[in-house]
Structure formats: C-alpha cells, structure tokens
Image 1 (cartoon, rainbow, N blue to C red):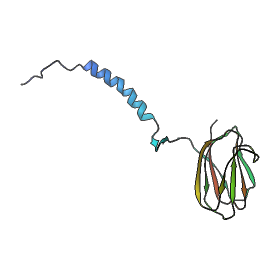
Image 2: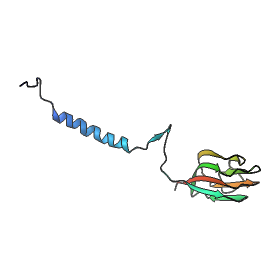
Image 3: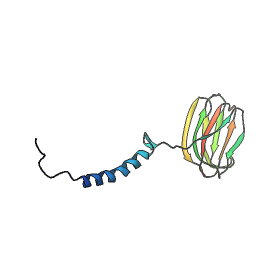
Image 4: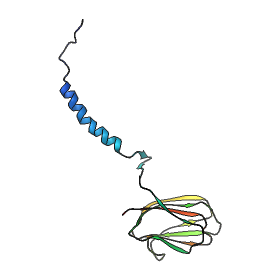
Length: 135
C-alpha cells in the first residue's frame, strides 16, 4: 500500500478559505440579474390609459410620480399628438411630444421632479403611459 508523500493537507486553512469565499458567493448570487448594460428594476410600474381625447390630464403631483418609463401607442390615429410635461400643469417643463399616428413604444426612462401631466390634440385613443411611484 502506498502512502501519500509530503505533509498532510491543512484542513484548517482550507476551511478558512471556504468560510471566506462562501459569504461573497451568497452576496453575488443575491444581486439582480443584468439585462444588457443596466440592472432590471424590480419595482412595479403603474399605468394611465386614455381612450378618449382628454385635453389635459395630471397623472400625479410631485409627491408621487418620480419616474417616467414609456408611452405606448396601441391604437394609432392620423391626427393625434400627445405632449408630456414634468410639471403639475401644461405650462412648462416639456419632456416631449409623441406622434400618435404609429403604433409604437416610446421609452423615456427619466426621473420626474415636479409631477407628470399630458395634453392631447386631435384624437388620442389607445395611449398608455407607464410610470413609477418612488416615495
């Protein structure tokens, strides 16, 4: 029978290495999964859907909406436009204008500091705004 040559393995050092690496592994596995170059946000988005030609609608005041995700046009209309504002009214801080003539999703992914309001002109049927509350 052959006996191993050299000193016996140092189980104390091996155990210390395992105990050092194990917490790091647990932390790494608990991080969110990366999607592309950014992390997935686990928060739930809320929506505001219009089926009529609202002229002006304040979705929320500054206390609530803190993030605009996207505008989704599901029922395009040739004569419709929507303007989105980072404010409690339609007087200032325009974020952008969306042509409602094509079914599309317009991603904004921006922080809102003053509230979220939109105005429409023409026919604005079938438009959804995705936003997020961060209190």
